[in-house]
Length: 491
Image 1 (spheres, rainbow, N blue to C red):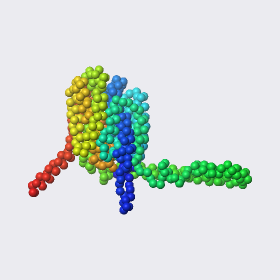
Image 2 (cartoon, rainbow, N blue to C red):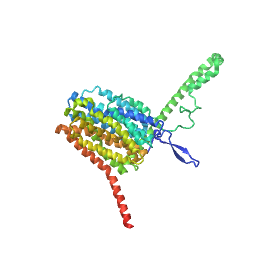
Image 3 (tube, rainbow, N blue to C red):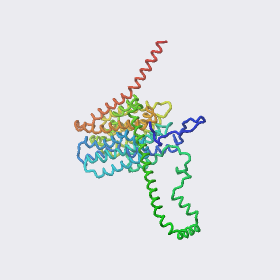
Image 4 (spheres, rainbow, N blue to C red):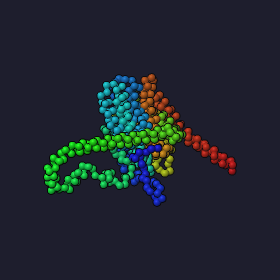
């Protein structure tokens, strides 16, 4: 799998036998790695955190445009869905341009979508500006933020991902300017080692630009040299007059040739880079080394298809549920979505710390959090008081902290070299779930005038996703038990 110069986590060093060996990069698990955590933290505030607060905007859009709940919910679901669905295509950008450039471009596109959305006259206009444009820009900044944290950490991966993704919770009740994504992208400094034979600015110390050389030449001549040069100029002015024009024309022709050569060289290098990035991206998905040959990874994809909508639906429809239950006054004091967001922060950090313990399996923590979340989804429709809803929202917030473990689980399944493409597929599956979940819940409400059935159906689909995760481990347990039984029978 191709990795750009930004993706290198190790330096190559010659051993005495002239073989290439690997040594850990000095920034791994320290140094600039914590700047990656800070950068990813703010990306999550600006993207995922703001999307968790879309339920408030959904209520305003219902009042402003007077459309059905199912149609209005498409605005939020498009924004969240496209942010994640574009993951595999953003992997192509990362392979070609690197994480830094991809994140900066994403910040610009996201900001453009928000600005255009300010002039929306109807819901359909928001589909394009807020849903598609802002969503695509968010996706370009989100995936690099997750991938770079994974590349900079080895020993404390779960904790680092947990700290960086706590921005999702903060963003649910804080607002920020989307252009700050560009700053976050600029912090994603490459891990590539410095090349030998270059000075601090990355240029050959023996090479001197033309204008600098000219300046040094003039300085070395001094005032006496300049005076002599003027006298020589007067004596030979007539003699050189006829030769000046052809010489200038020759120099101009050489300059044009050099410009054309440099342009052609740049285009050629860019073409080769794009072609190589594309074919390695294509081979990762459809070639002999395809990720889809990994059965556990395929099961993980099916889980992602069913799971994410159960987490998204409460954020989109919870503010309206509060209005239906006449709990607006209590909710205004401390919104339920803020309870989810705040506990979500602690959930990610705590689950990350627990998953990094030597005696604890990341996979087991991940599964336990999933079971807790699906149970909370089933119980939520039964709560009709603010206190009961607050307790369930706290459970949803804490258990959904397992999202910080998703990159770690993905890396364990496919390896760090395939993390960008693999995690792109996972968040794409999450995006499809987020895209269809909220409109489906709104459509069920339009038919039944209740949100209860929406949560029950989504909870059942979530259980189906968890079932896919359990298939392969159960098969392995059965095979191991069979081998032990056969070995005991032979003895």
